Length: 512
Picture 1 (cartoon, rainbow, N blue to C red):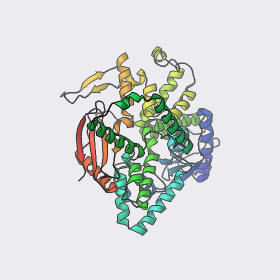
Picture 2: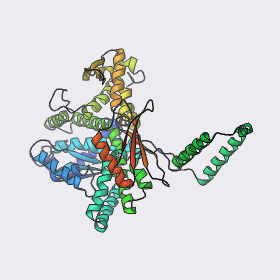
Picture 3: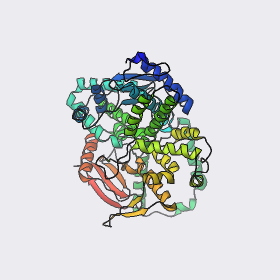
Picture 4: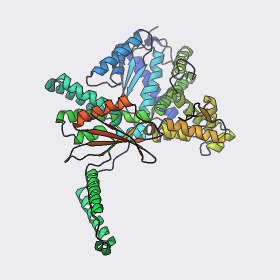
C-alpha cells in the first residue's frame, strides 16, 4: 500500500512514505507535542540520508560540515565494518543543535519509525537545545553552521598553502588536547578603560587610608626583601597572563611564541568545536531523556486520537523498548547505565509523583507531590538543570528501589569492595548523591591548569594537576600529552601533581 493511500483519519498506513506524508506527519506531530507538553522549538529542516551518509556523519562527530582529517576516515572504516558484519546498527536519526534545527532521517526507516524519530529529534532534542541554560550560554545555534563552513574551507586552504602534512600535524596535536580545550565557567566581561582607571584609583585611595607610616621605620632583612620582590614579580606576571588558566588550547593559541597565524586559527577552530560539544557531555541523560519522554508521550497521544493504528503503534513500542533497554550488570551487553532509560524513568517518575504520590513521595518532594503540575516541573528542569543537578534533585527512593541501586565503597587499601549504602533513609541520600556525582564531568575530568610561565626568561611552561581522590594520570598518556603541548609551545613544559585537599606535591613530570 502506498503512503498516499492511507485510511481517512490516519497519518499514514503501511511502511512506505513519501515527502508529502513526512511533511503532513511533522505538522500534526508538532501540533500535538505543543498541545500536550507546551514545547518551544527552533524551525526544523529535515534531510533524508542513506546508511552510507549516516556512517559518514558518525565519523565526523555527527556534524553536517566538517574539515578533513585522517581520524575521521579511520573511524568511518571501523563503523562501516561493524555495520556490514552486523556488529551494530545505525541510529535512526541525527539531530544538529542549530537554528534551523537540522534532523537527518534514514531513508531505510519505515513511516512509523520516521514519525517516532520526528517526535524524538525534531521536537524533543530541538526543545532541549533551544531552552536549556547550558546550550543558551555556550552555543550559538544560529551561527554554528556558518562557522563550520568557514572552518572546513579555511583548513582546506591551509592544506593547499602549507601542505597536508603540516596541517595534519597541528590538527593531531590540537585533537589530542581537546579534552583540556574548554572553558568550564563563564569568564567575566572585560572592564572598559574608564572602569579600569576607576578601580586603580580606588585601590590607591584604600592603600593611602590603611597605610601605617610606622612600618617604614623597620628595615627589612635582605632575604625577606629578595623573597618579597620575587613573589611580587611572579604574582604580577601571573596576573598579566590571567593565570591560572584551565583552557590549554586557549592559552597556547594566545601566548605561544612559535605558532604562525594559520596555526593559531586552527587551534581556535578545534577549541570552538570542543566548547560546542561541552554542554552535550553534561546533559546526556537529560537530553536523551527529554527526547524519549517527548516521543513516548506524543506517540501515545497520536494513538489515543486515532491518528496511528495498532500496527504502527506496535512497531513504535518495539523500537522504543530497544532504545530504553537496560542490560543487567552481568549481561555481556552491559556498558553502564543507559542514559535513555535513566532519563525517561526520572521524568516519568516526576509525572507519577505529581499525580499519584505516596506518603514517602510527600516527605521527599513536598513541593511536587500531588500538585498535578508535572508539565511545568519538566519544562523548568529541562531549562535549568544538567545531569548532575537533575539527578541530585529528582532521583526518588522509589526509583532507587526500581533500579536496585546501592553504593559500593572501593578503598585502595582494602582487598574487597564494601556495600556502603542500601535502601534505607540514610542510604537513599548517599546513593542519590553518589550517582549525581558520577555525572559531574567537572569531577571526573582531570583538573590541569597553566599556573606560571616567564615569557621574558626561560619560557618554561608550568602546569599543575590538582589530584582528587588519589587518582593519578596514566604515565604513557601523560608523557605523550606533554609532548603535544611542547610541540605547540616550543620550550620546556613541566607538570606537577598536587593533592587537591592538602596541596602536597605528589609527582612531577618534565617534557624531553
